[in-house]
Length: 639
Ligand SMILES: [Zn+2]
Image 1 (cartoon, helix red, strand yellow):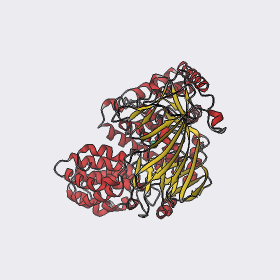
Image 2: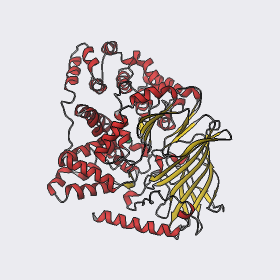
Image 3: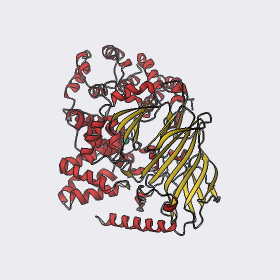
Image 4: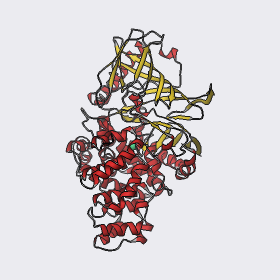
């Protein structure tokens, strides 16, 4: 153990001891012997979360109990949040995070009202709620409602669902959205156990990112669903969905929830799940969360997937009919270790969640589908990283990113994902796979259910891999990777032969040759992606015509390939792709697809901008607030 880590742990133990003295009645009042011990909050300067108003070293939330009614007409969740807290003996207030909540009252464990004040709103962070505490306050009972425009929640009309009959609600908490429906300390470094009672109109099913505590029941026409998460989690991992949902078992510990009409397609696409869990366990150790279920959402879900513990949320756009996009599931599954078990303490270290997961995803893919597929996905990832980094400021190409005064989503780039993964591949290559695998398993074990920082990761690499080896220390360039911009010179480059045949076809087409339909038909979707991404960015309309005619690109079902085609089409003002583009942008709301296409259109004042304005006006109502937040800034007139 290094000096730094020892100091952190000593401080954390002191705080926990002090907090327990401050709230003696907590365990007696709420017995839950199987619940995790309270995870400490780190106290080093780099672990201070600038995206939360909470001061957890003075007073912190340890457990959240929600009792909420789902009101589809008013588009609100309302009821109570009961928070168990720990505090320093001298604490006079506790600070929670809030964004637009309508708070009726706050009381302590005996029902006595507590004074509170909601502070001024920051555009990125929302508002602090400062609650006055008495010496014996151990619990807060907050009676409140979420606002109809809560940023975490999307309320879909029946027309926006697959079934078209019932409305639908789902949440997306990462990064700092959950404060719009849960009054708590919304910081990834403040882990909390939680439970929830969700009351729905009749006929609906509620699912959450936790095991069911009791079988669902109906009472007075109301559906009642109870959940309980006994592991301390970062509060962004609390997630809910309510709709017409059905379940199908995929394996002894895995299954899929979705709307009834999508169940067959979803279950078929996900039939490798149990194999994936076994492959991941081989790499990282036993799966730590019990069940691994997935929820396939309506198409407006803003992300590819969200690793909500025990219940990954997935975009339906991964359903290609041929499992060609299931690496998405490998990614979300890998988060069960990287991100959910060991979690970035602040959003400046988001790469610890995403880079580690992207590395792990490819290892799972290699295990299941072979090294050729994995090598190709590495090469695609590195290309995408270079492309994205070319448009970023130099400071934003650091893994440990400075987000002062900014929204955490500014760090949601391929630097976190692909530069992070490249860093881990580079270390693996230097020390050997066997040693690196043992290190990674140890990293997850040593920091299970704990917050982590870049500094802690580097300290672990030095302690368990470098072990004083000066030559290895120099070779790895650890600090350059994490704290400096750009790509260090020692990056393990992707195999230049990964797509040799495809690259030849690109060259042949570039020389004026006809599109090679036979090759195209034999290619995987990764190979098709490579082909489209490597074509010259400027192509004459006749050349694009020939591609569309040969490959049917305007109607292609694989959404990643379709995206690559539309990106190329916009760069060339290719009018025959516009109906396909319009369909693509109105049938799904995945931020990764929607944002770059609409931005590229909007940038082209003459040709693209009117198209963007017309399509966005039509599509916007179907997008999640996380997607519209950035697009509204383009001033297309629909916001
Ligand atoms: Zn991820």
